[in-house]
Structure formats: structure tokens, C-alpha cells
Length: 158
Ligand SMILES: [Zn+2]
View (cartoon, rainbow, N blue to C red):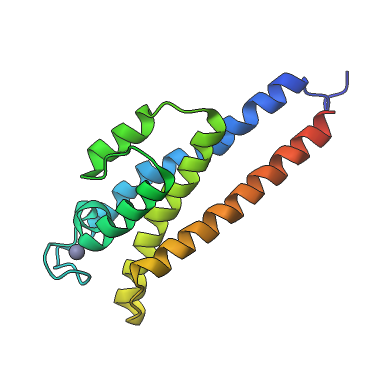
């Protein structure tokens, strides 16, 4: 057996794990954002712009989460980072669904951050509907990538 011939089961088994691992650190790495200066949130002018506020407390984030979660029919707590991470990691669902859920959640977090940066650095304000459209687009792209990856893995392991 040549070095290129990895047993089929092992190869297929590792791939979803790697895909999942790519996702999980993104949630953990969000801790970096807690170094933000303590200033009033430019989105709502009602709270100090902390990580908690930006992603969970701000009405802008709330609106996007609410629509996203009801469209995806997900039971995830979005009242704060701690409960959020807990409810995401404890959610029981098939692996494929889980990957899809991570892609969706990552897209929400990424776009909330992106919307905040666009507002601050280029004065561009995105209505929540535009953000939700962008989230959908990104998830679709991600799903196509995952599908392609699976097809490639099947091709090399056959
Ligand atoms: Zn706010």
C-alpha cells in the first residue's frame, strides 16, 4: 500500500470534523473583540459598544438574530455570549445540519461585525434586510463549497 492510499473510512471521517473545527474557533476568537474601546454604540446610541452589546444586546443585532432564527427554525439563545455558545454547542442535530447551522451562525456574526465596521469606517449603514440577504448569499456559497469538497473526497477515495 503506497503512502497516498489512506483508508477510505478514515479519510471520509476526518473531513466533516475539519470543517466543523474551522467553524468553532471563530466563536471562541470573538473574545478578541472585547478589547474594543468603551464608547456608545453608533447603531442605537443606547448602549456602550461592548462585544456583548454589539452581537447580542443591540436592537440591530436582535432584529437580525430574530429573523434569522425564525427563518431557520433554530432554538438558540441570543441574550448573551455565554448562553449563546452554550446553546449552540448543546444543540442536538445531524452532522450535516450542524455544519449548515455553523455556516449560518458564522455568517450572522461576521456580518454584524462587518456592518459595524462599515458604519464606523465608511459611514455606510446597512438595513437589517440587506444584512440578512448577504447572510443567505454567504451560506449558499458555503454549502456549495462543502458539497464540492465532499465530491472531491469521494473522488479520491474511490
Ligand atoms: Zn447598539
